[in-house]
Length: 400
Ligand SMILES: Cc1ncc(COP(=O)(O)O)c(C=O)c1O
Image 1 (tube, protein in one colour):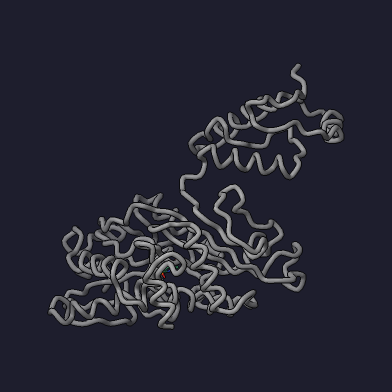
Image 2 (spheres, rainbow, N blue to C red):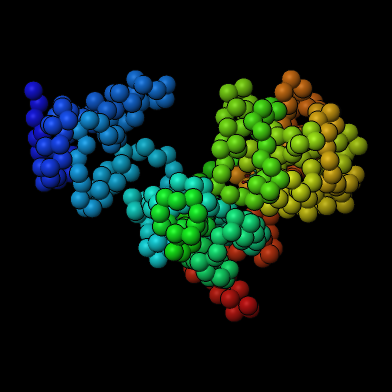
């Protein structure tokens, strides 16, 4: 029988000098095995018990032989977990008001488990793209972020200008020039109750994720979602309660599509899982559903502004935001998804209906180009420089 031996040196984890847990395991009849043994066994179990791809051999998965770890050992294992390549994204910097600073070590990018955002979903979030070292539409996203926090009854841990400054400093520390910034306001850690009365302070977290590749405006298929849409009160705020959104995306993918499209309580077109929807009607009008029952998309609103150029040069007959029936949407010349992650993505099929010619439409392509250009060289109202490292920042700060 294998014994509870010292972990091998190559594992990079020092032995855990806590016999009481081992004694407990023996008393509980758990079969001891070498440290590496349980890990491999657990990986094998994980690989056979799910249809997902098997975890890499070095992934740390708990088994029957659970060690009691010191803080230093936890840190080492978090390093090992990160080095295992389980994450497929590059996390370049994180700010947390819990430790009151920025870290560039992905292993340290953690949040407390008793944070009510984790176990109750009592938190809100937002994003902003980073393009050529500039934050795109930060002010617009911040407005929505603070509005969401107010709707979720989360008291701000800092005033708006401090939050803004923290976000910009986090991007600066990351040295990321292309990617995205994600940030959360939580009612805070404290206990595991439902009420936030036990949370001493709200918390702010932010993370910078590098993504060197740009979205491609390739045509996609969407399906009408069978997942109930959130009620108006929750749809207009960007809370962390994204289970309906996630299930809508999964349902779309399971049906060979890119995502699902929600209809509102009156049967009008609402929005996609994490993106807005736009159409080009047969009379060449750019048409979007009103934002009163859905998330007010920063990208969609910017597209509505930029599209005025296409009206001016005669490519569009007009721009309108009103109720859109499914019948009208499916009969459109063009349909597109709009959001900060995808920018403008043409839809060529909705359920069984081919949209327009069945190919990516010219207006969607033009709107994609306009928004990309705006990200690269738009006005200061939509492009915040990385204040702490660029000359441009010195200029903008001396003017403010
Ligand atoms: C439900 C929902 N609608 C629309 C959007 C698009 O918003 P934005 O353009 O600000 O990314 C998002 C983006 O996260 C979303 O989650």
